[in-house]
Image (cartoon, rainbow, N blue to C red; front, side, top):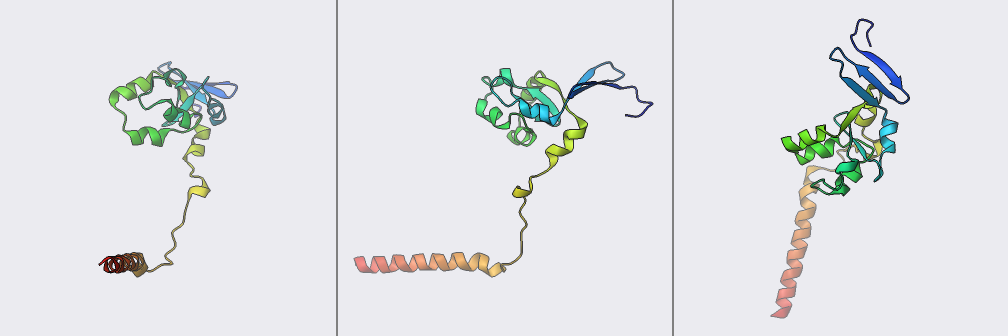
Length: 152
């Protein structure tokens, strides 16, 4: 925060509030705190760095509660955007907003786990990509013709 800034921050344990010039309070939550809310009693998700308490919405969710439970305690941005939620759904989501992810934790949810990263090596040539399936098809066709010839 710049010394000249009009916003002030007040720490509250793991949470932090920021009051801007419009006096609207933004509550910040640490990622570790959001991760703890992954049960039926308390279900929080993160969408675009905003933290939502979807506990009371679990049973009402049109896609079923499992969809939300799978994302509980973590970043649901990709899943939320992939579905293509309507304007009404986005407005409804705003009623479940409880705060934002702390700025220091935002980089943690952008990282792709290394186990999911695959490096493609150009070890096969282009012909093997079509030659092997073509040979397999030829063998199947030959076997079919032999089978048909034995029936006759």
